[in-house]
Amino acid sequence: MSETFETAVRAVDLRREFPDGVAVDSLTLDVPIGSVLALLGPNGAGKTTTIRLLNGILRPHRGWSRVLGFDPATQGDELRHRTGVLTENAGLDDRLTARENLTITARLRGIGPTEASKRVDDLLDRFGMRSHADQRCQGFSTGQRRRVALARCLIGDPELVFLDEPTSGLDPAATDDVVGIIDSLARERGSTVILCTHFLGEAARVADRMAILHAGRLVLSGRPDQLAAEMFPHLEVTIELSQTLADAPATMIELANTSGVVSVASAGVDGRQLAMEVAHRDVIARVNEMLVARGFSIFGITTRTRDLSDVYHVVQQRLDPGNRGLRAAERDAADQLDRSDLVEEAA
Amino acid sequence: MTIAEPLPSLLTERPPRWRPDISVIRTIIAKDLTAIRRSKAIVLPMLLVPGLLLVVLPAVIALFARSKTSPDLSNALSNLPSAMTKPILSLPPREQLLMLVNGYLLAPLFLIVPLMVSAVLAADAFAGEKERRTLESLLHLPVRDRDLYVAKVLVAYLPSVALSWIGFMIFAFISNVIGWPVMHRIFVPNGMWLAVIGWVAPAVAALGLGIMVRVSARADTTQEANQLGGAVIMPLILASVGQSTGLLLLDLTTVFLVGAFIWLVAFWLIRGGMKRFDRDRIASRL
Image (cartoon, rainbow over all chains, first blue to last red; front, side, top):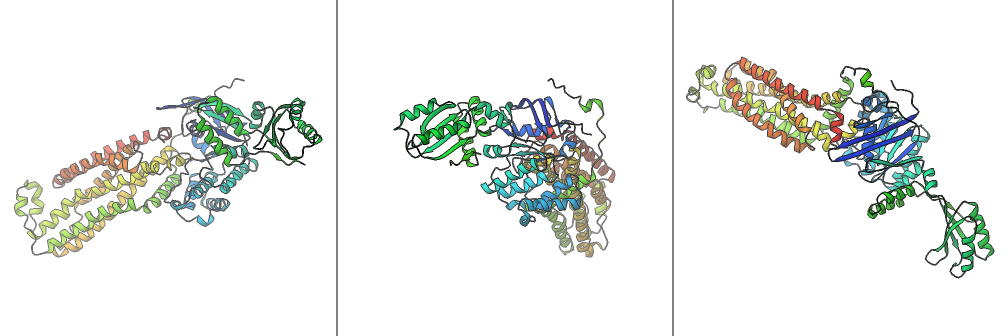
């Protein structure tokens, strides 16, 4: 019988070794019920091993955990009735149809044939795979496979969902769908989601908590907005002007001396942009008024709220300053998706 | 705040006795059989070898025995110990070839069928899951290790025994029908064939399975498992064919003893495989 529990996942000092090294070390982590945790880190950071430990298919060599009130090491089967896992590769049997893959999973989860059939149809509908239901998975595209695998992961109506690279190989539209589904899992159904991904943009959109792993160790965890506020206490503002400020050095000096302005610099190819860091939003209005009074027309003001991906990049840079290629790749991946910039049109 | 480690439940209560979950086992068997049925790479060798050994070969021998040029085996058989050849030499010359080959010599060759089929299916069931990268998602399901193991063992074992028995029935039918003009009676199955079919063949299927279960734990692909398994199984086939040809011509007691020994080895291998079939061990190799 499950104990009463307040957190979906509590891991304390978890360590797991393999013959080729330590995969997870001293991992202590709490995940509240109903939250979406983005588990981030480069390849080999220990994300997949963490999922395997928390779902009880690997035993820790040190430490302990409680997941939905169960000890994964000794109560794995009871726990796995309440979890759903999307593995990094879809893990579908190519020789079976989409319907068969889902139905077998439902049956193995103890769902009766009638209910299983209903759930399979519902999920295939929801993931836009109904018309392919009776085709063998062998011929499916990466996106189709990922959809079927995600449907399979959800067939047991899990309380806790582990998603390992859920949007890998998906086109932007399919990615949007999946991100929407992840969001609805937590917001509408109250499921807890642990999301491992390289795509920081999608993580930033859905995660209300983040944890960064590096070489098997947890280096940072918390709420992305709080972490970002701690790391980036100032607001980044870009102002598009009608003319360049290069010809108005007095205005630049005045701006720099304005209360609440932390930094100011001319930007853009033609110098018509003003890149500033300000202490708080009220400063933007003052700057706006001052520039208008000096005869500048303002075409737009953009503020950028720092998010999970900024936090991640800073942490990675501190941990591994020499690995520019990796950071660039991660940044590129983040740039492919919505960066959750907050854009405000100037009046 | 200090977080105290909860007392592991294993220390306070004994783990419950394992009772097989028939529904889970049946579902996994049904899944694997459906997948196997759709795989030409598995089905073709499973049908070709039994087809050759149990249909084509006995039919050719029976047809040859019916021809007027059927060879006289008296001289060849007279060189063997009389105890072995007595039942055959006591027959009319025309019947000797059919009785020798279809009645006795094909029996040990027939053992290749359960051995090969169980080995191929076991390689697919265990190493094949790794190769297709479906094993991890299976491990993440609420299926107990032992239920999964039993299902995988049965999915290899049951078809191999069923195919052997069905193949034998076809063999007996062909031998008796085509050989009727020569024998004028039903001569297969004789006591030796019944012992082979009912006792030795299931044991040999279990042996092939047991070997492949052990081998598959170390292999990452079906091909690798088949290669490793083949290195163990092929010498066994050759030895069993050579030895059992002589044994089958001796007496039923020896055949039963040989069968019992094979059962013991197979049981040891399969039981050992069950002890080693542990989620953590398997997931560590993913």
